[in-house]
Amino acid sequence: MTISVAPGPDTQEGVRTGTAESTDSLTAPDIPWNLVIWNDPVNLMSYVSYVFQSYFGYSETKANKLMMEVHKKGRSIVASGSKEQVERHAVAMHGFGLWATVEKASGGPGGKSGKSGGPGQGKGKRG
Amino acid sequence: MAKAFKYGLKGITGFLEPAERDLLRSLINDVISMLQPEDRTGQDPLAALIGLDMDVAEPTDRAVKRLLPNVVKNDGEASLEFRQLTERSLRETKIGALRAAALDLDKDEIVLTADGAKHWSMALNDVRLVLAERLDIRDEADAEHVHRMQDWSQAEDVESYLALVYNFTTWLQESLVQAMLQSMESRR
Image 1 (cartoon, rainbow over the protein chains, first blue to last red):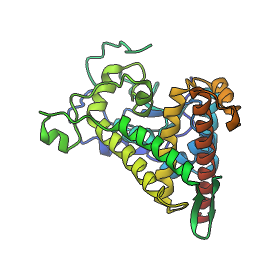
Image 2: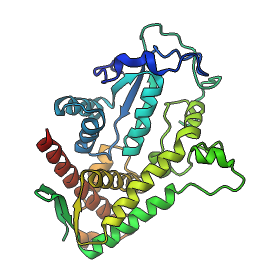
Image 3: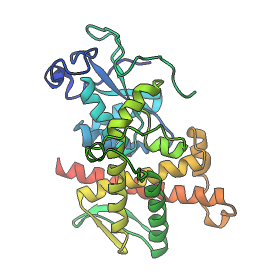
Image 4: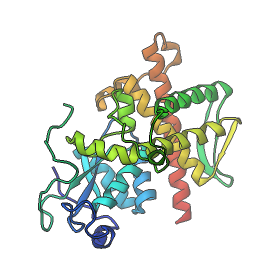
């Protein structure tokens, strides 16, 4: 799908937050992660734009652009940052009822693909 | 008849008839009961206190799963791990917004603060997500089909009744969000 349009407000911050070599040793804090919002036929376009403006502090123009991208292309990367940051955003998006997932930025710097979170059998559990 | 939410001097206001408030209250309560975490005896009290839930599983009910979706696409394992850490508090956030909205239903005229409006928009959204699952709205064409159902005299079965209820909540949420956007605009 499409590549990032919108480096979020936190993009540059990845380095500090990761509390050094904690348990997530495979997920170096400077490997960027993306927050993806997926299209669905229920959420109102106005509401999605409102969420992007109020939660991320995006301008109306930027929020609408991202919202239209979700609507037309099926998904959009609306923020990126450290794993912790995008996970925090994802929970907030779920709170609003938006369909959000996190994924490792492809082609990001140092794109080491040690899958975090478990031995990664790679079986998606539902079709 | 309900009046659309609007933004004005008093903030964001709306008006609902008693029957409409009863309807919304019961929809909200339905969603709350779907989100209420089971009380598990024998759960580690410390884990519960900090919101950890090691017994959590991916929801089997499609509507619940839409409210509490997997955070990593095609990776059930990573998603489950994330659920253990976050699902309980996500459920509580949602229930909090739904309860706050339900409390505002005690009066005909609804006057909302910025926070109140946010809770209402979240609550209406969750109600719509659940109704949409029950109506099997999978894509824009399904949504369009449901949207065409506007006449209450056509309500002859559960499905058409649900569609009308869905359209009512859609209309209400849209008017609310427009008022919220206006209010944000005026504060800029």
